Image (cartoon, rainbow, N blue to C red; front, side, top):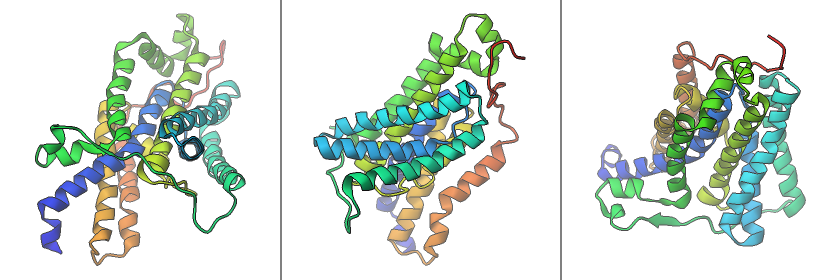
Length: 314
């Protein structure tokens, strides 16, 4: 068994799995960066991902087109995230309580809609998921090729979105407004920036990305929708955002770390390592707790993080 673990084939398979498993964590993390940079903590990511997973599956199943599934997943994510934006921005509710409620609601609502549409079956309906897309020439590079260039299209799209998100945040007027709103909403308002609109847009961006992350699970990684299939990835994405100190490039590295933990526990279970599978399953979540303990005291949160804004109030 040790020889198998130390083999080149195991390493390549492990790292390719890490890249793939990091995708449904990185996508909601990229969107959450916008929300948290604007001062909104959306703990409802888990519920939003489940709604996105359902939307993606419904779109792909009934249209027969996976890209319609992707689009519907993002629409589901945006619509669901509007609830969070309304509660946090307009109602000025406690963001922790609102996000927790939306996580619970999202799981129950997705299950309810799925059962209304398909009923209760012995076997869930299935689709043909996105196939592996080998990049010509690059996929033939030893070791690196199978790891980076033999993935499905959603994985490649996710890595492109990392650069897009970094560019928008660092190089555009919108990115500067997002940071200004998150650091000093009163000053931003005085400069003519619509704080409410920016925060709404940021939460909606987070919803679209979380929905896409859910779609990766249902039509990019698996071929069906399952209850609770996000399996805590929404919460891990929030940990990734804090660990990455609210920057997309660092979020990429952090998501790969959690993806590696996920991939490792799957590979070790597959080869029959004599360790109770419960311990292996807990590996990514234990890593999440350790990361939060390690970085939470040193992290410099946006000054207006989780603070509601009302014009005229100090």
